Amino acid sequence: MSGAFPAFSLEAAFYLASMFEQTRAWFSRVSSRRTQGAMLWISALLPYLAISLATASFQRNAFYLLAMLCGIFAFWYVYTPRRVVYDVGFLVIAAAPVVERVFGRIYPSPEHHLRLDILGHLMWIRLGIMALLVLREWDPGPLSPWPQAHEWKAGFLYFVVSVVPIALAAIALHDVRFVPRHDPWWRIAVLASATFFGILWVVALGEELFFRGVVERAIYDRWNSPTLAVLISAAIFGCAHLWFHQFPDWRRACVAALLGIACGIAYLQTGSIRAPMVTHAFIVATWRVFFR
Image 1 (tube, one colour):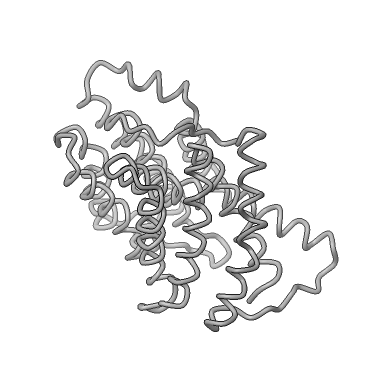
Image 2 (cartoon, one colour; image 1 turned 90 degrees about the vertical axis):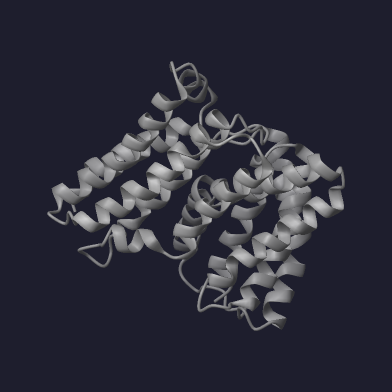
C-alpha cells in the first residue's frame, strides 16, 4: 500500500534516531522538560495522522485514545519525581497497551498482509526510550542499534549455553513441537536473518531495555544481589508472556522466564542490554526455523 510508505518512513526515522546517543544528547539540551514532553507527544501522533489520513481510516475515538496514552507516557517524568513507585507506574503504563493489544484497535489494517499496528509498537518503544533515558535520566548501560564485538560474543555464548535447555523445557511443557522447516536453504536463511534482525532491533531492544536495563538494574542497585536481580526480572518477564496466546499462557511464561535468566546473566556480565538483545534474537530466530 503506497499510502503507508510515508508513515512508516516517518516512524522509522523517529525510531532510529532514538537509538543513537547523539540524538538523545541533542534532545536533552532542549530548553525545558515540558517542551521535551510536548515534542515526544507530537512526534508520537504524527505517524498515526499520516497513515490514517492517507488510507482514509482516521477514527476520532482511536485518535483520542492514542493521544491520551501517549500524553501520559510522554509527560510522566515531566511531572513525577524520581521515586521507585513512579518508576513502577511507568513500567505498568509501558506494558498495558502491549498486553491489551491496544495498537491493533487503534491502527486497523485495511489489508490482511499489512500490519499497521507495527507503527504503534515502534512508536511506543522509542517513546519509552526517550522518556527513560532523557527525561528520567536512567542509565541502563550502552544503547545503540549495533552491538560491539564483545557483546556479540557474549550474546551468542549465552544463546549456545541456553538454547538446548530452553528447547527441552518448551517441548516438555508442550509449548512447542520440534518441526524443522523443509524449505530451500536460501528461504530458511532469509527467514532466519529477517527474524533475527527484526527481533534484535524491535522486540529484543524494547524488552531487554525494560526488563533487564530497568527492572534488573534497579533490583541489583538496591540489594546488590546478582541472583535476586536475575531471578526476579526473569520471573516478571515470564509473567508478561502469560498473555502471549490465550490467558493464562503459563507454558510460554515458563519458557520465557528461562530465556529471561539467560538474558539476565548476559546483561550482568556485560553491563549492556545489547548482549541480551543478541541472545534473545538468536533464540527467537531458532524458534522460527526449528519449532512450531
